[in-house]
Image 1 (cartoon, helix red, strand yellow):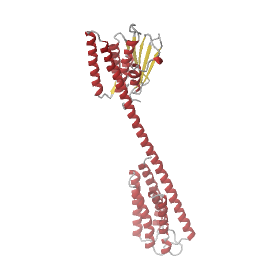
Image 2 (cartoon, helix red, strand yellow):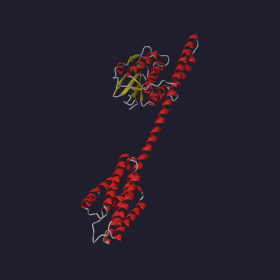
Image 3 (cartoon, one colour):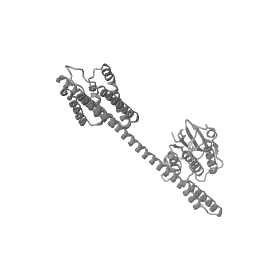
Image 4 (cartoon, one colour):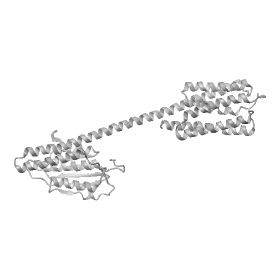
Length: 395
């Protein structure tokens, strides 16, 4: 519960306490058991209704509780003193003035706005004000009964103060926990964004910069140098696009299917592309733009690895297949080749193609990459990434 919720709850409780004495007040006034002037009774009733209205407003808005409670304290004491001044001396044992019915609400309101110690002092002050009635002769009460009434009021003060402080402490703990959770979520989001950015740039360095340098280093003829130049220009265009990407909030499955097919055929013209199931996915199956980018780029790198390494040293390029579909709110892309295969556990740590351009790139957007291979049995790279929720983000 928030601090405003606590104020609203406490205001409602004090308002109910005031309303609960209304039958007693109405009965005394209608039966004319009171001895003070009629104008005083009318003024007291108006003050009582005003207090209930002020507390109801505080319960509705969550504001103004402190002022309303102080009004209850002051009014409760003032009504008792007014009776002592305006009522004639009692003849014998007269019924208790109706103003005393306000005493529990008076001391309870003090417990709301004050800590326990000062609230007990405020309760003692009200008990002393009640003691003015016997001194003025307007009401007579046996000493033992007065002591018991005073102790009861102090118990009400202590119970109300402890209850209110406990509720406020619980609300403070909830607010602190919420603040800490928000801060932790913000730190996690910042760390995730930084990881995605690092993975993106690591992949760019591997896929573009290192690839271009490799082509340029191997160039021996004019035709080779022309190929290297084209590769360099393509890399520069991509770098420019990644520095200032166009914001695309969501991507459709059909668009991703086209990108996967283009990536596969650009790197392996003879590749088999099976993305019809993805293209036919419902229109509601949307992807976050960064998820679509990561899947397309990781697929391209997986195909490139199959072309470069699937046939082994000097061997032919193996048949490569790219398949994609939506399975249980997850986009699944599989790149498999019928090449020589390898032992994934034996890949050197400096090889970045699978770990960075494929693995980290997909993991950075909440997905997962799995490499399945063995010597002589080809290679399968399985990519999984979540669809977007209704709000546009990953689930």
